Amino acid sequence: MKIKFFLILFLISLMQVTKLVNAQTTAGPKSFVVANTPGKNLAKINFTALIFNNYSLQYERAIGKRISAVIGFKFMPKGQIPFLNSIKSLVNDPETNKQLDNLKVGSTVFTPEFRFYCGQGVFRGFYLAPFARFGSFTADLPLDYTYTETNSGNKLTATIPLSGKVNGITGGLMLGAQWKLSKLLYLDWWILGPHYGSSTGSVKVTQALTPDQQEGIREELKDITDGDNPLKATTSVDETGASINFKGPFAGIRAGLCLGFRF
Image (cartoon, rainbow, N blue to C red; front, side):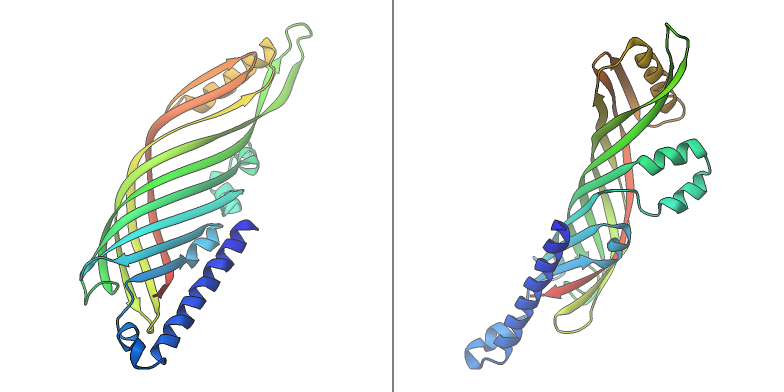
């Protein structure tokens, strides 16, 4: 609800700016210079990101004839991963799909960049944009495990609520194009923006564990961290809980369509 309120407030602010510029256009000789000088700023919202439950805003400012500086902010509230059913159909593994059902993820990302336009000038035409990306991703994952009681020999199943955070830093290059739709309205197409870097993170749970439970969790975590995995992970399990610490490469692709207002 807070994010929706923020977006509404953002759009209302843009409408007020638009009204102010239009008022200056008709105010008379004193406002002539202001009204006929193009604004150096663009405020944008990535409306395709809404499909993925992401709220993505961007601010762009002209700093040269064909160069601009940009800062972007993206937020995804914690919840189930987008297109969960499609992903589960591709995985087609009951045990993995059960884990995906319980997985909750969220993110906050900042993206500064510089744009170099190849067309008629700043804000218009094709552009190349080197960028950096600073992301923080949260996750909640209840982990099912099986253990055998030493005294009774009974085989039992239990769950531990793992939660944690991953921080990633990447760099990349965006190829895009931007068009002027009207005096104040622009369309920005992020055609393709691959990026690559590194990440560090951990997930853990603080909970009293018996020796039998500890052994069962160790075996379960071993299955997760072993194998062909680019992440370097270390696990720790004792009577106070369990944790996985990891680091490794991090990559992604930016794409989307943004609607921008010039002021």
